Image (cartoon, rainbow, N blue to C red; front, side, top):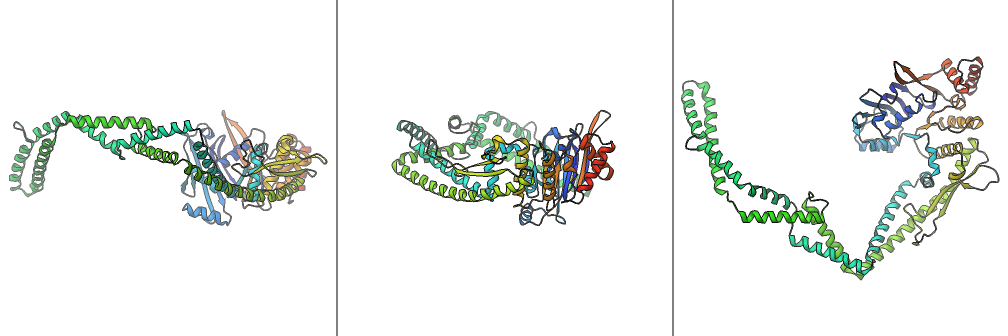
Length: 567
């Protein structure tokens, strides 16, 4: 459950701290006051996308933090343990920041986490229904996802998709093998040439770096020889010798040290310096004697380097790629060439693999289909029951789970199985069931989505549900039914809702008012928990736009009294 929410420099909000309770909480305020900014900030905290446009004008960063009381669930405990995070008194502090550079950071307790980690963890805690999320019901592909979530087979479907992907890959290999002989022969010739060229080059990983270093050394022979000779002249030349100079210096210092022991340490250091310089001079002499200019070897190295360039250009991503990429290409080409040369035997092996994978995929698809068909009936019954509570008592809701028909290629299976899932609805008695996406109004879609959320929530442990203007397109008795339904949901969960309807707001346990003000040319959004006379005035404004007339105030007061304690 979300207990505290702190927002700073987010959009129009300068600084807001909200304490939230269990039960039913509504956010209200005039259009444009910034109600959805609060939900936007919460979504950002939960791992939603963040951008610099969310930073309040004049600020360098926006930050949102929240304290969550954790339900005693093993999956939450296991997740925190796996990420070396410790809850305190069964609570965690979440914090997220977006900076003007565009960089975003997130923490759970004091442990830095990625946005993906944050979203994964908060999925255990909060379900956010966005302002236009009901529009997803217009996408038939989403219907399958809702049914799979209800049936509890989301993970099984993901496993099935992996099986199906493997089948597609095997079929592609077989199709490539069965391509026309001329194309296959061209492919074979190209691979054979590549394998021959790479094999003949006798490459080994890292050789390009070795050759580049040797080429650099050989091509700079003259400069290197000149530099070494110059250094040797400085150390032990006839006209000037650094070694002799240090030796003389050491002798004088040693004689001085015999008269004053404070100079002994300097004398020892100078004597060591003399020996070190002498060793350096000897080493340079040996290095110089070993320097040999080999134009033949330089030509060989340059030719080898040019070969690497050509091979990389043909067989690697770029000429800057490591030589190991060319070697890897040669290995892949040799394997494919072997398969092509294998002919009938390899084709038969591949056909057997395709047939076996098809058997596995179809069997798994039928298992998923059986679960879906059984869940579809149960889901439809539960959704209809909730819709009846939401003012759609005569509505018939159906989850159609029909098997796919074979396509031109004869395939009946897809990456999610053999079922076409679609929601059908009949809003009036006697009317036939028709596709929800084609006939439902905005208000009906909102209520169907709420019903789905309610049904799905009954099977999970998420304690906090957030609805951003779920009341879009409804009013009157429907709004009253919606309010009562949300109130009932809040008996076992924390329900947070943005609404513009007084009939919903009066049912809330807590009402929070969002207000936008402009001072000295600066616009800011303020958030305040209201009660007593302030709440009466806000309900009156929502009813008639007039929060001061005695009639509006009296009606608002009576609504609040009538709904007090209901649930």
